[in-house]
Length: 162
Image: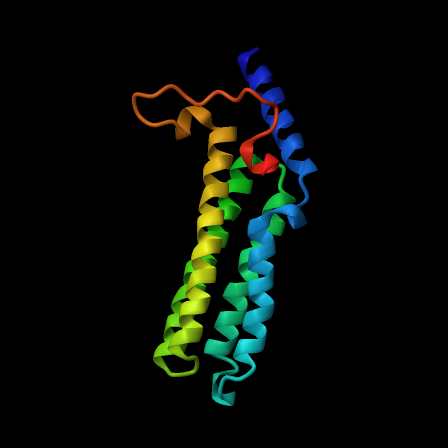
């Protein structure tokens, strides 16, 4: 009986999350804009980088918003959160490729710092989103040791209302 109740609650929570379109997520919007910017940036890289660094930057950049879209299509909360972590990994991979591009003098220090600020903003948003998902779907697991799990007074989690 207890598992049936938990299944109903989990289904309700996923239904709430599904009402939010992935295009409405600020973290998706920021990462999508970053993809366009990076496509223009790598177009100016040397031709010999077309199938190496150029390609790696494009793939990791596209992977961030694409995994957010894919995670949204999942019917499992654990899968949903797992794809958020994949997006975070792609973001960090992109961070390295841009550092490498700077060190190879394909981009200026100023441009690198600008992208680093954007990446940091996306990273913070993504980490906050992951944290909110964990708190909403797994409050007992995400609560700190010695503290009671956070109880929600509203039917919608913080990440949907913001």
